[in-house]
Length: 261
Image (cartoon, rainbow, N blue to C red):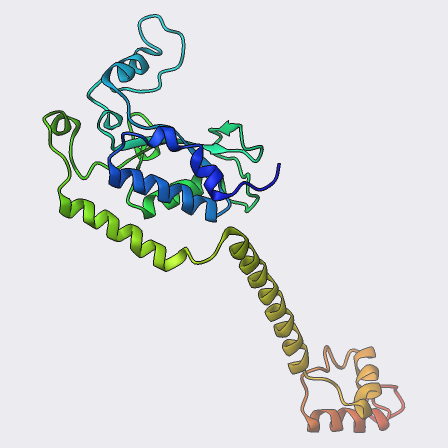
């Protein structure tokens, strides 16, 4: 399938973003956008839940239900119930299939796509369920502002100051590193690799150029000296050294014809 545009990816999550707190909704939209810029496609699979929907999920895997458990929270005890949590999945390149494979590398950059999503999520200030100790929830992302579910149930909500801080973070990240598209970043990475290869080649050539060489007029003398075990190497000598070796060779020292055995 042809490359999907960002707008096409975003549309796939529209229905799941309905009802979320407006600032949290903006953060999730930015997450989709930032992941797309890295070559990773995601969709939001869960957003706001009613208490009844939460209770239905809680019942899964309990009271004889043989399906795996998916939540430890009853209705009113999940941040999904208050519009401050969402779940995501990877969207595959066919544009239809989703995956929860945390090791999948769909964009072929040697990094698991799931890890790239989590990295971007944390930059935006989101809390990841995969960091929880008691019940790891790998697709789960939330932003609670330090408010407990009990406080949410009692009607407490983030202050405008807290919400403004989130908006400031989003704008700061946008000016820092969202200038390049996914294609531009890939081209930049390729350029970096080319430059590194060139730098390595230059270093190799420089080392070779700095390596001392035997003068042409002393080469045969050094060969003769090495042949009889008088020299181990001849590549680090001075002019006087090569002159001495040459004189000894001419005197027959290295061929047994001279006065030194």
